[in-house]
Length: 246
Figure 1 (tube, rainbow, N blue to C red):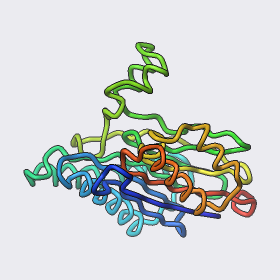
Figure 2: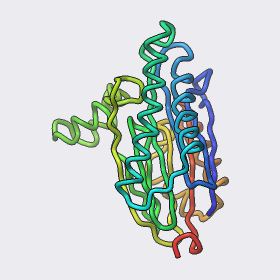
Figure 3: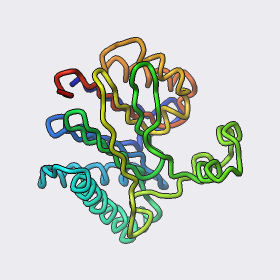
Figure 4: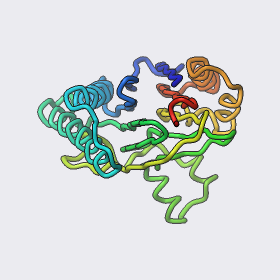
């Protein structure tokens, strides 16, 4: 398995409110994008990522079926949600802080994904890039309801307004996905600092170059900055090889 990752504060921001954690040995990859005033977003994302990582450090994911895996991942997110929500309630300077989160668990040819908010998971397979996760945003809700078009969604003034986040409410319900991979498929996890600046066709072109995952991450982050870099940018790229899917 080839794994690459990179984070950058972007060209316009003074601090980085994204956070990520790679547990390659366990097949677990975590990415979060914090929201909140002052440095609260940074606290929220790092707290959530650390809580999920610690959960799986203490309780290795051994479930065999999709239902059991889903239950374990949800338990980790529930623990992170409680921690972030509690900190936001107890400390006035952290009031209103929250974070997105996207988690990938890869076992052989199976990929299990969970997400809250608008950090994304993509699949790159046979030259095609497709979004696996679904954005929990106000604009996506309007788009699904047929109120606005895709073009209107891209230019909507509220396109960054998320409708679900870790720490925003005492109870959270993530989305969960399970897919099976083919040889040489890639998984991309990213914050909106990437896809908000780099269109999917351009991301696809980078994967088509057949570079290492580290090189792919570096190019994607550079492209986001070259296109404006208005937000923090974090990417995790995972390439599945033939040995992993046998």
